[in-house]
Length: 519
Image 1: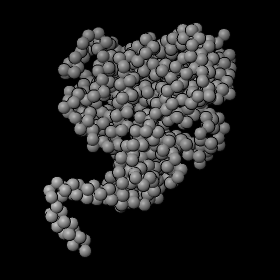
Image 2 (image 1 turned 90 degrees about the horizontal axis):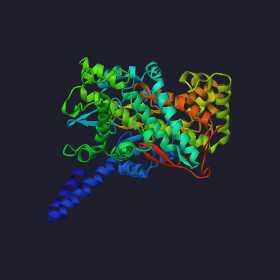
Image 3 (image 1 turned 45 degrees about the vertical axis):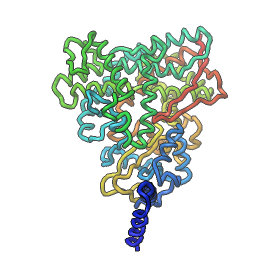
Image 4 (image 1 turned 45 degrees about the horizontal axis):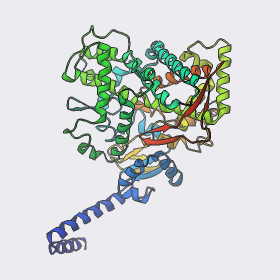
């Protein structure tokens, strides 16, 4: 019967004028593809928006709207632990699947959302870095080389360099406070975190704090990159026709490379011309223990995993990904403290009491903050819980042969993932999840705390856990208590909601504060 139907269709097409026949074939092809998408084996019975099962355009339009994280929360509350958000995409909400999908023994691999879209181009070659690589060997070997620079021991040894950024931030804010005008504290959090990354990477601030503005327009550039990634990442096959086109320059991502190279050249004191394959002379860079120095030493040892292209790519990744995520957390912290002044007062009292007891240096050390300021640690954790930095699923391919997720068999090659916003807003794990409640991290039972920690997904998990997480914690733990020791802070417009937009990272604007110097 099906063969006869096919013959009938072909005969009908053959009798039509050529343009009409071609148009009919295109329509039949599109309809057939849409139906194939909708009724894919293993996915046809997974609930979700009807349109999402037919075409990836539903997902693209949702991402373009800038609130996909909120969409995912609503969908999981409506449909359960598995939601089909695309013809080949399934969003997962059960935190018990985090270790299964992302754990150290997982066979799930990263998708085209990461590489080549989020990688950089070096001398015509698309070069992955630790975050974007889909090659497990490259990831393993590169991580071995990079881990030391990101270890707590190395970072604490460089704590005085972070203190320089803290002190400069406080100095600048004191000047602004004396003017009596509202301060966009959100922008200053970006300036602070970028200059810290400059110190750690190059022993040199980028100049954000000193100038009080976006240096070389790099913040604006990175925002454009994120917007491109979030949208093109939904249809990654289009990248080769857009910024991935070898006939194009590589677009905004190469501006990040140029920004990193500028810092390298300034540190070396001359034009190294790395773009042309130039070498960094051993005498050009003073050994200060920063990441450039450490990685350059590995480069000079002849490691194939730290060739010049890898050295530059890792430094560019620091600029691109090492600052925004922390500034997002800091904006969340000050916004929610401003919305909950009782929490602000409780934190300030803890800081003042610890200082009065002689438990805090000036500036505060990370060890002191971690030991003597438990409520501060709870505030930081809750700020990241209520507003995670990433707002899309961390995509992974299901291994060949398929696998079982949440009791359902999912075919190999299916893209699955967990959105941290979904696990962080699970009411079965976090009571009253919309509330900013730092006390939940201090007053919960051992079993409740275990479930919350299992669901906390701000830094991803497993071997792909964010390598810069220790930097983020040190930056926040040192700066926040110093700022609140020096200034009284309150939202200028406490009844006004901030604005957020999900462009892979969920960026915020509107954290405007009145700052008054404390006596």
